[in-house]
Amino acid sequence: MKTIIAIAAVASLSLIAVLGCASPRGGGVTANEGFTIGTPTFDTKIKQGESESVTVTLNRGEYFKRDVTLEIKASKGISVEPTQALVKASERPDVRLQITVPKDAAIGEYKIFVKGTPQTGEATSTEFIVKVVAP
Image 1: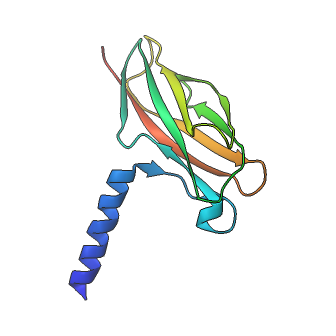
Image 2: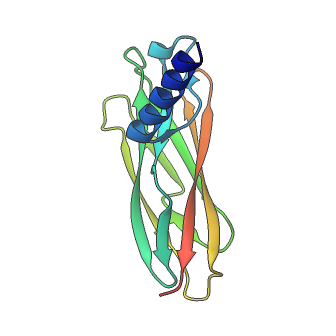
């Protein structure tokens, strides 16, 4: 029994590493009618005074065919563009974000918050870490 539990735990962790970080499911009642928001799997490191592009992905269930509005916010001290994006049901699910770190930003960890709200159904949200490092 312990072996089965250990194998299941390792398989789950492996799946998370492969698929990346994703939000709780939003949208409809079943998994096929919902969506999650995928964010970078590893911490994004950005040097003071520089910018970096990252991709956020809308992972749709097989039957989820609705537009989703993404609202993006950054912790105080760094900035992100765009702050809002509409992902239409017929479009690619990837949204490129441009994260900018001022030269005088404190070294440390900052969060980027992403909330997805569909035309109808439940919203979901997630966050990911940006590490500001010295140049």
